[in-house]
Amino acid sequence: MQTGRVILAMAIAAIVSACGGGDRPPELMNLRSSTDGPDEFGILPPKPLQMPEDLAALPEPTPGGINRTDPTPEADAIVALGGNPARGAGLDGGLLTHVSRFGLNTDIRQTLAAEDLQWRRDNNGRILERLFNVNVYYRAYENMSLDQHAELFRWRQLGVRTPSAPPPQEGETQ
Image 1 (cartoon, rainbow, N blue to C red):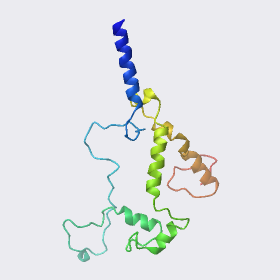
Image 2 (spheres, one colour):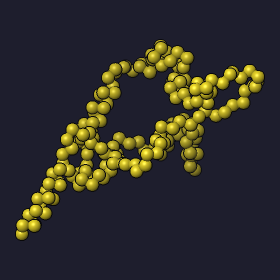
Image 3 (cartoon, rainbow, N blue to C red):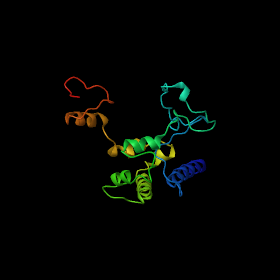
Image 4 (spheres, one colour):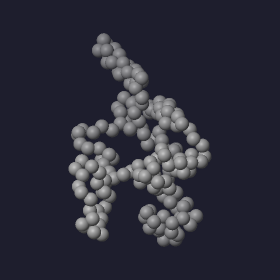
């Protein structure tokens, strides 16, 4: 009888300990890497090589300097938004005016971080899911996800060309 009480007390202690997370933010996606390898999302592919028109006019190499094939994601984003990368993101008045045309919230990062933390606390999974580190990320954000196939179909129905998407199925329009 005494061992039954000890086992019951240990089970209750384990369940109660799973309830509290202290001040740690909830982790909805419980993924752990067993290696110390590189972060595959941190690797940017280089730009394609181009043959110069005149090989004699090439600049001198600059060891440790920038290369023409080095990725420039910030400058590429500025160009994609219609700005001038030579002026930089902060100095390009036209770009700044265009992206803030619907208003500007200077503390948007803090607001979104606080709202997402509250969302994760409210959708942290059930007790046994937390106890066994079950991945509840997709279920928590399911109603916020976009159905990519339905959205692609919607854009095609509006007549918008989608050249980077898979070719349309029979009966669909490009």
